[in-house]
Amino acid sequence: MLQIAQLTKTLFQYKALTFFASLSLCVTPSLFLSPSAQAEIKFPVQEMITKMKGRTSVPILLPSNFPSGRGSVFFEEKVNPQGYLINFTATPNCRATACRQGGMSAESSGMLTPPPPKSDSRSQYQTILLANGIEGQYYQGCRLYCTALVEWTYQGVLYRVTLKNGSLEDLQAIANSAIEGGSRSF
Image (tube, rainbow, N blue to C red; front, side, top):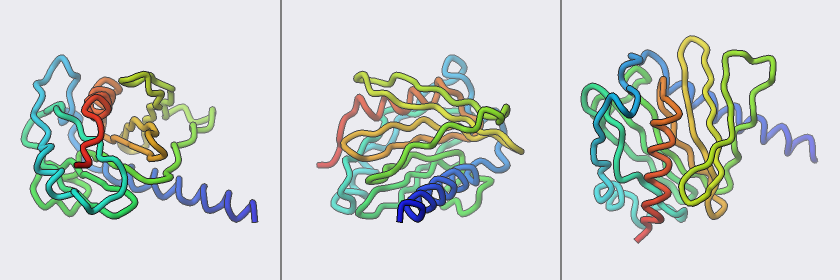
């Protein structure tokens, strides 16, 4: 029974990493510049709350601001009772990995990404401190492209922010803004 649980956990983690890695295909590195080289745009908090309200049981954490690279950023939500996913896209109604720039998700009872093997020299992993003293972790995996994520848990829910070719600074800024905004489940 324990082996089945471990296999299920490993499979879930693999699927999560594969999903977020697939968000990273075919992106221009300039889409997300360092925080000092770009302005911030307002995250559509009220629009997202209106679309998500009553459709999920997890606390909704959303950033107030979002680092803006070149071009427009569109936000598309998918919601279920156990969580939500907000895709950051370069075009409206994006249905391909080429236009996906990243995402923000919440998953009830989700599991943090395990550290990569020490032999994996193309990945970075570190524990970080987020707003309100919350411990999180940063992970960047590079193969043909790079996907970076910051994740943390709050009230038994796993929260994750991903960006194609994302920097720790940008990811941490989004995560901190979401944490500081508090639960928007109203």
